[in-house]
Length: 327
Image 1: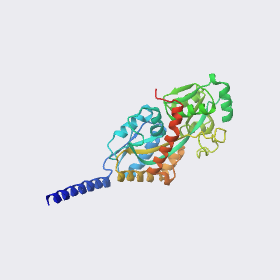
Image 2: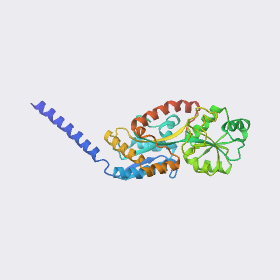
Image 3: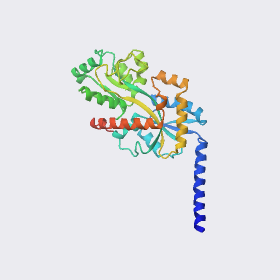
Image 4: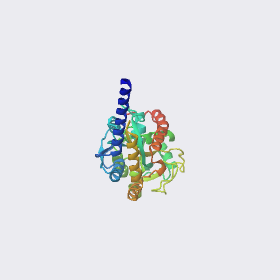
C-alpha cells in the first residue's frame, strides 16, 4: 500500500509539473522579448529586425526589443543566445554568416545546429557583382578578362572574415582564376563609400544594401548571384546568363531560440512571424529594401532547419578549401 501510495504521489507530482509548464507556455509571453542582432544599428539585418519586431510585438501582445551585440561576424551574439534561458524571452535573428559560415571560420563555443531551435525562415536577398564606374568592361565576362590583364593594379573590397562579401570575393577569384589584392573594411558601408569614390575597384555585396546606389548610377553592376533575376532590379542579368554559371550566394536570415525552448512557445513565435510577414505594410517595406519574403509554406522551423543544413553542407567545404579563417 505504501508503495502504491508513493507511486500515486510521484505521478501526481509529474502531472502538476506538466500542467504548470503547459499553463506557463499558454500564458507566454508575459514580459518583453529580447531579439539579439549580431550587427551594428542601421545595417540591413538590423533594419529587418526592427521592421519585424515592431509588428511581432502587436501579434504577441508584448514588446519585442532589438539588442545589438556586435563582434566576430555575429558569433558573439550567437554565443549569448545559445547560453540564454530556453524560455522564449531571448531570441536571435541570425543569417548565413552567424548560422552557416561562422562554423567553418571560427572556433565556436556552441554548436550551430544542436544549440538552437529554429523558429522561422525570414526574408533574403542575393548579392551583386559591382565595380567602380571607371572600369572599362561592360559585361561580367569582359570584367573577368580585364581583371586577368591588370591584376596588380586592381583591388577588391571585403568586410569581416567569413562575411558574405569576404567569402564571395575569395570564391569569385577561385572560380574565375583571378588573383586580386583584397582590402578588408569594417563593414559593407565604408567599402561601398570607397567603391563610389573610386578608391576601390571591385566589390560583391548584399543586393538590398547596394540597390539605392545602383539605382542612382553611382556604381557599375554586372550580375546578381542567383539563378533567377532579382525582383527588385529585373534588368540586372544573373551570373548564369553572364557566363559564371553556378556562382550562387544568397544572404538569407532566420529566427532561432535556445535549445530546449518548449515547442508551444516555438509555435507561438512562428505564428507571430507568419502573421508579420503577411502584413501588407511590412511586405512593402521589405520589398523597398529588395528583400524577398519566403513563400508561406517555407516560413516554418522545418524549412529553416533544412536550408541551414544544406548550406552548411555546401559552404563549409568551400570555405575550408579557400582557407578562410578568423584573424
